Structures are given as structure tokens and as C-alpha cells.
Amino acid sequence: MSESRVAKATIRDTDLLASLEEAEEEHGSLADAVRHAVATTYAGDDDTDTGREESGLPVKAKEGHRKLVEWTGHGGRIELGTAESILANHLNIQKDAVRKVVIQPLKREDVIALHQGVHHVSIVVGKLQDGSISADTTAEPETETAGEAVADGGKTRERLDELASAEVER
Image 1 (cartoon, rainbow, N blue to C red):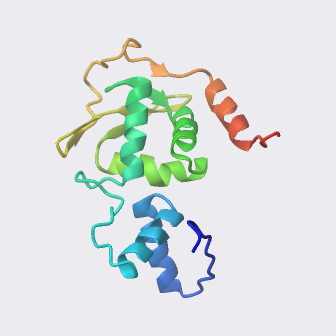
Image 2 (cartoon, rainbow, N blue to C red):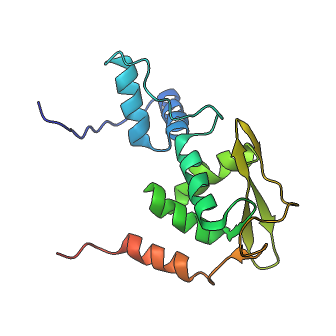
Image 3 (cartoon, helix red, strand yellow):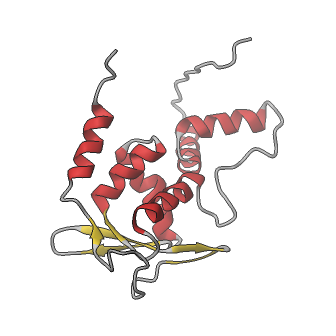
């Protein structure tokens, strides 16, 4: 038997589609949701990672938080568009899915806060600590930028979008 296989299926049942969309959100991708379902249903693997860690956050959201901390530090700020490009590239998901898979779960758990400026929206990156999560927007940032949003005028976002859409030349 081969080591990997691609499976396709058309689903028309609205209840199944709703369940599949919920599983996709929980696991971060449709492929991970299907793999988990097959592993738990047919392989009898009850210990399979559910896609959520102890804090209740999906794994992709937690990985996204780590990447944001890497870029800004705790209490730092980053433009929303720049963050979406960085996270899509790092997590290997579509840019359009970043808000649903990473941003919304982090905001729902108060790990990040959104700051609406006059000309842009930025993310204020909070801390994850032993299940207690907070995005303290009043505390001084621990980064050298001292409260400045990580921004490059969109150059990084544009370059990442360009790289993501480029074809591989051989």
C-alpha cells in the first residue's frame, strides 16, 4: 500500500457540510479535519490531537500567536494586513482564511486586541500564560519599537503576496 493517498468526495448533505465546516475551523484546515475524522473513526486512534491545546485555542491559532510574538514581542503592534500575509505564509493557509483560523480565535480568547487607527487597523499582541490569556493594551510594549506598530508601508505584505502567487520555475 502506498504511503499517501489523495481522496476526493462530493458532499451535498447540508448537515454534513455544516459539521465539516465546523471541523475545518477547529482543526485549521479541511485536510487536517478529514485526517482526524478518519483516524478516530476507522483507525481507532482516540488519542489523536484534536487540533486544540489546553488553552482552548486551535493549534494554528497558537502557532500564529507565536509568530506574532516573534515579530513584535508581547505588547507589540503590527498592521493587520501585514500580519495576515506573514501568518498565511508561515502557517501555509490562504490569506483569506487567516482571520477565521487565527485572528478570530485569538481575539475571542483575549490573546490579541485590535486597534482601529485613522488609516489602518493594527493588532496588539498579548500573552499566553498557563491558560490565562490577556492582551493588555495599556502596558508598555516589551519591544524596542516602544509602541510603534510594525509596519513597512505594506512592502512586506506585497512581497509575501507576490511570492505566494509566483510559479515555481525549474
